[in-house]
Length: 368
Image (spheres, rainbow, N blue to C red):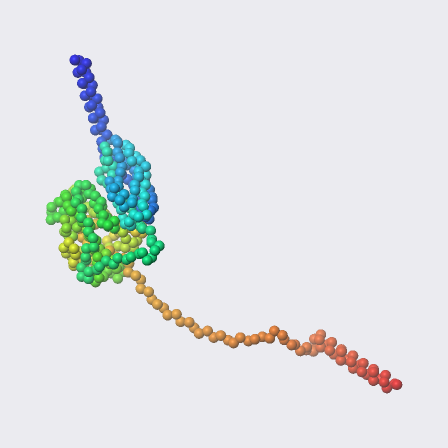
């Protein structure tokens, strides 16, 4: 009996030791990457270095993975980690490859650490993919979007159910992407909404709409919506009620920008009315994507591009050219000897000799 009780005690003590060690190893971690954005041509590949840091607790087994790897794979984007498991802190390299058929657009790679030391929020890498130009000109077709003359018209829209505590990354047609940080809630009329429907909306612009100044030309627009509302009285806030920005990543040129457009009414299919209120600030990490991380209200933004420079045609006046007639110079020139020249002396001597000979002949004839 004593041996049995001793065995039970030993098992219990061993179980408590294991439990204590496991509990001591549970913590949280964060993922740091050496680049938060990169660009590829369809069919290309690249790599990004990462570090899984321990931010609290003790190190234990942690796995790094892309939470949206399945969705990316369906677009021909494959990911592989050189070191996907370890006790933080550890590091590795993420290899990113695209297929020749990967559609052009902005893709977000959402990295997270799972296991006993999970990451508290995802780390997002923005991947911009550009398609290879077609060599068959006849196969290229251009789709002209209809432009409504008096109001902004919805081209496409995507709506997502958001848990404010978790946040997330959401995209519309791989052209407009919104990154909502964890613990981002909605403040409306003094009330805090923790779970909400979040929409990204792409609009065409009215044909009558001009730019906010002579140097800009509008070419498109987009808006966030919360529970179907595009309304400046709504704000995104963090857990202590401070404004919380939503990060926007948009396919755009290196000189593109936007202006905030307020005062209109949205009915689900159109946005009518409003005016330009302020110029927005964007960063351009490369030539095909633009990033804004200060928007904290679900309102309208109008995309602008530089106005084409006016070209002035300067008439070219050519002064008349007078061409003088060509003078033909003879190639053979007859020269008359002048006195004192060697040719003149010789001629004089010949003449004298002839005269003397004639005189001598005449004298001989006379003697006879």
